[in-house]
Length: 245
Image 1 (cartoon, rainbow, N blue to C red):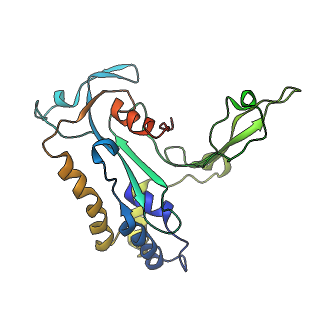
Image 2: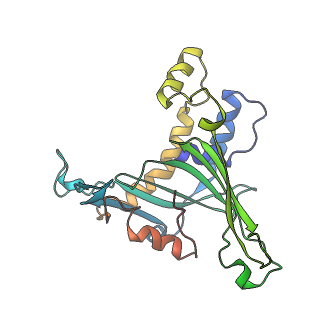
Image 3: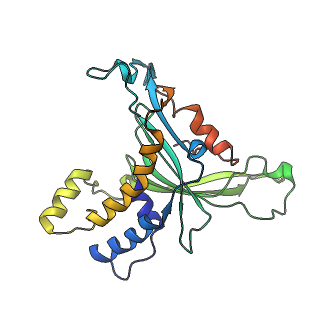
């Protein structure tokens, strides 16, 4: 996730080469800041028994080989900042977890609402923020979400989406992640492989979180849910909510 954050927030490299891309990613990783209040802005969870894809799912502590008293997290959500000229003051929300409703990796850029809309409040009740969503897997593509007037004489603006899917536009299928990495090894292309400095900068973000969480109980959530309630409350405190993939 930190690699995806770095790719999202990095400046345009001087050239499209492994060295220049790594330089720009490292600048982002070194500029990441943790929130002052980790109690509110960092949540970890552990799944309990629930239902997933119509089948009964065990809780993490009921899995084979797992300590019945384990406090290992299976979910994490955190609010980070990137202290650069471009991104200062912009929150970055990262979340990942196991036993969620579906397997998905995506990057969602949520734009600020316009400071003034020349419409009545009732005209835009169903209008949200514009969004640019990059779907990394499994359905590789891009979605642009914006407001559009509903056809008719009545003024009503609601959200619509424009979708681009690689699978629909190209006959060639994208290689699996490890297929791409193995090919890059054979070609000597190091673009997707982080250097030691990137790994160390990433751990400089993770280590304080691990220390803060040490000895505490993770928040419970049922298998088949999108995480613990505390993660929703973390965003609700800033009048935001998680995007449903």
